[in-house]
Structure formats: C-alpha cells, structure tokens
Length: 211
View (cartoon, one colour):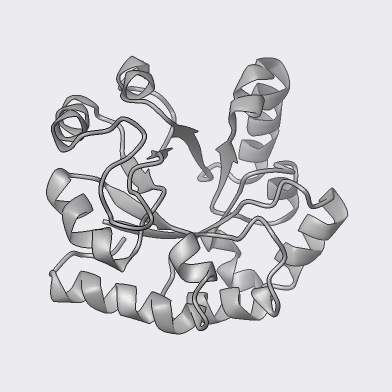
C-alpha cells in the first residue's frame, strides 16, 4: 500500500527540514501542493531538498520545473485537465527529459473513477474526501459498499485522501485502497516526524507492505 504525504498548502516553520527528516525516515512519495507559491519560490523549495530525494517528489503546480529537477511525478488538477493542449505539451516536454516520470490526478466521485478508461496513463489517483476528520466515518456521499464496488471494478490505483490518519489505515486497507495520502494528521501534529513514524509502525503492525 502506498504511504503518501501531501505538503501543507500554507507555510510551515522549518518545513523543508521536516520534509528531509520524513525522507530519511523512509517516506517514498511526497506531493508538493503549494499553488500560491511563485515558480521561483517553488524552485527554491525543491532546491533546498537534497537532490537524491528529488525522485520522491510529485508537484501539483509549476510542472515545467520537472524538466529542471529529476522528480518522481506531476499531479494534474482540474484546471490542468481543462487546458488540454498546454498540459499535453508540458507533459511531452517533461517526458523527454524524464521518461519515467509518473502522472497522478484527483477525483471526488465514484462516477469519475468508473468513467476513466482502464488504460489511462495515470499511475494512481486520489479519491476524496473519504473520511471525517473527527470520527473516521465516511463522508462525501461515500459508503463502504460503494467504495468496495468501485475499487473492485476499476483498474486504477486509487489512493484515499481526506480525513486520513493512523486510525483509518486498517479500514482503508480492508476496503481495498491502493494507498493513503496523509495531510492534516501530519502537519497539525506537534511533531510531524513522530506522527509519521507512528503511521509506519501501524502499517507494520497490520503487516501491510509499504510502497
């Protein structure tokens, strides 16, 4: 199961250092979701992270930076998908420099998941919001039955996002999600690294292989 951490959209004190610590602790995929950053500031953010960790980074904006840095992937938002020509061109240019780069996107309904062709180029997709932050119950109109059915019917690698924390790992794994994207539980923690390590321990206790 994929264990993904998404950056805070806001500025976090000592954020880059925390991200480096997460990588050193074993984090394999980090999504930088900071749409308010300028291209220059995004470039500086990535450059502050040691190059040997760049192949674990997926960016949600300023995709052309994936030509400058050898990143893991680029994430397409709804806006990117609406700009079909410019997005297609950017992806083609990026892939000339980094043929192995992955593509990801986000969905908010099961209908969108089922409408996506099985041979689509996305390596995995986020589906959200799945859980309620306060009680780990489902939200966004999802039910356990509808999620199980969709995950079985779709050939997409579907990652749960929204309300994901250490308490939802077992349930998400049982339903059949390909991964979990952690956001609030990491960045609202007083010690993000400690929280991440607890999540890793939870995966290990449940004997869930981490990708």
